[in-house]
Length: 125
Image 1 (cartoon, rainbow, N blue to C red):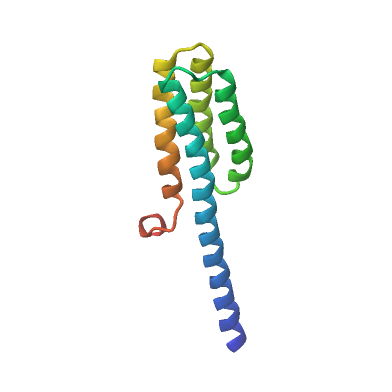
Image 2 (image 1 turned 30 degrees about the vertical axis):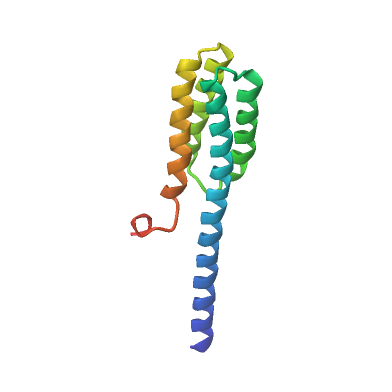
């Protein structure tokens, strides 16, 4: 009986530890990416963004998404891929007015997406 209680408590503690680690990891990854997007947004707003800036953000995202596939559904990751690809194409064609809107959507997604997977009562129940 005591062994079963200890095993159950250990499993609960490990589960809570994993969820806390996931929460911290997701916020850290999206904070980094959000910062890169904010820099790109500022460059687009100044009309000084170029193809290399956009592809640097895309490369950063490719590195991050390879690890995030374990924790986030593929559909959420594909939304970011879609908006980022459109923004890169618009920056390449120097359509800064349209690219600004795409990056603004990306900023909003990266701000809100980690909340959807955080330890909040509305996400648990």
